[in-house]
Amino acid sequence: MAREVKLSEIESTLETLEYPISREGASNELADVTLLLADGERNLGNLVAKSTSDRFESAADLGSELNNVLPREAVGEPFQSEGEG
Image (cartoon, rainbow, N blue to C red; front, top):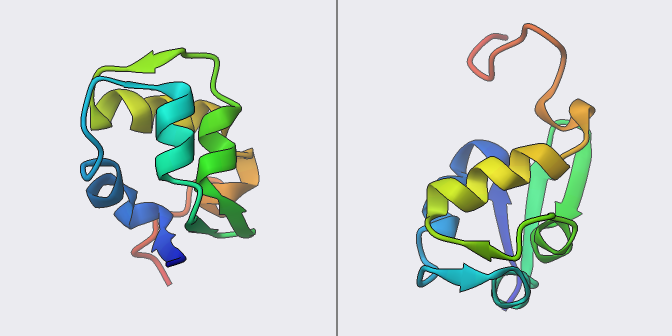
């Protein structure tokens, strides 16, 4: 079943995986997750597949790596926090 998750809520999704996990394993586990971004949406499994890490030791480790592969526009306007409106 396809899932959607906001970028600000991704941590809880990443915590559902069993660590350590390979890049391929994480990509497969997250293939049904659509990540909702400020500039649209991306498939979370595809983003994980773009990572340069072969293995993730924790949800925090995977989350940090995802920040490296997200497009800059994904988080919204520069200097704008998600709570501002």
